[in-house]
Image (cartoon, rainbow over all chains, first blue to last red):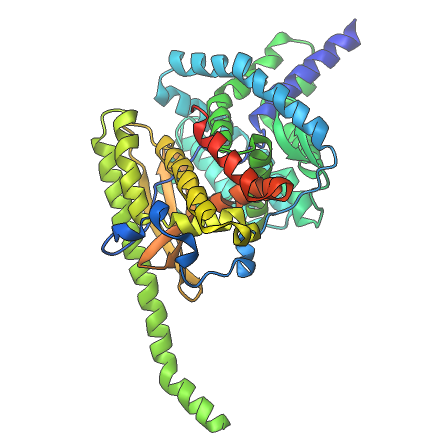
Length: 274
Length: 194
């Protein structure tokens, strides 16, 4: 009995904590402020009524920026099935959980909890900075961690935001480290519960999981039930942002599966460059 | 000949860089005014429905939906008849306007910080901004082009290009069924309740 119990706890813990770091693109649900310019607002030129072919200076073939970024997807049928199941699970299980969490806890407290877990994720960032040879960034991460832990009441407050040099430090993860070492994505995967990923990033999630202190109790906490609390709490607190990002990528799509796949690949391409 | 070229370059180079700088400034200024206009609308809106109804006309003024649609469809666009192009542009603009409007939460005010502007090609400027919204910070690049004034042709959030994303969806549709299939897909997406 001992082994199955330990195994099931490990699996549940893994699922919980991995979901927290799930790679739904754009992790944060951005607000885009519509934009742009135009002088006299020329109503005649307003899009829907303009003859599209009349806009000058356009050469479709030269627009490499808009070429579709490819990822090998030989498992598309299976992935689409998993995508469908995940979608229903988010709807039936995770969304009510997420809404309940948002209703029960005030916004400021939720932000504080997010800060604590993000701060605690420091070893993931530090180790991956080091593995990629980004030692200056590792130093900044350490500075940020010490500041937030000591001056921010254990990470509850993000005091590091007051220092320009510590703002907007790009996130690091094991998948990114593999990419820096020259590994390609491999095949595209939709992981049950977790959503869009790739072979490379999926393996990377295991590294991130092991490096995240929120999950260390699962490995070293013995068979006490409390060990499940940090990973579960970490999952729960991350749900609103994750689901919001998922909804954002899916909304107004023509093919939600491809929309998520494209967003994921583009997001990771950009993350690796940082 | 070489002397003439060198001379011409020496004389005109400062003007060329001056023109480029002016373009950057113009594009960025247009973007600022557009964003200010949208934020003012968003701040005044009391509910989502009001926000959605007011934001559409502003976006139509500032976004080049024609260029956006053309690129979202990709090379297959050339096989569209003028009527099909017009219909596709109309449907795509409805999708984009709805998508934009849904990104706003009434009562939440994003902070925009303008970081840099670059001209990757003639008549094109990418303006990089940092948007802070609901406690999170995002890098948002506005791709702008000069066609009847500076207009936005794509928005790239954290590396995800909206146009590229739609192209990845529309390209297979076009390959399967041509222009009619693209129009059907767009019609269905617009009809889908959000």
